[in-house]
Length: 106
Figure 1 (cartoon, rainbow, N blue to C red):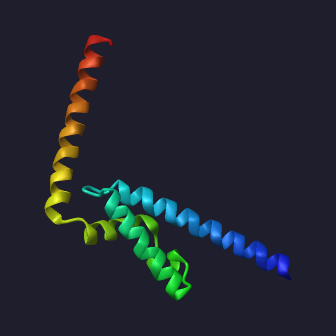
Figure 2 (tube, rainbow, N blue to C red):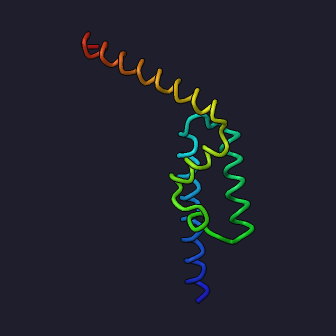
């Protein structure tokens, strides 16, 4: 039975690592999120799971949805709004450049 338990533990650990990786990537993609925010959120999740023994999915649900919630909680609203405006400007510039390349055949 020890082998089965070891295999189950390994599978649980792998699933936890996948959840954390997806959470970190999705969190980093949120407007205004910087390295400090990601580190704080990971610290919070890790501490909670260590204290309770819960899997992050059981404690926080879907990593994508929790990344949005964590960003809303940890990023000041003005910084997130500024990042959204900057992202919009970069997207608009990229769109214009693409049209210019298409029109000139470059």
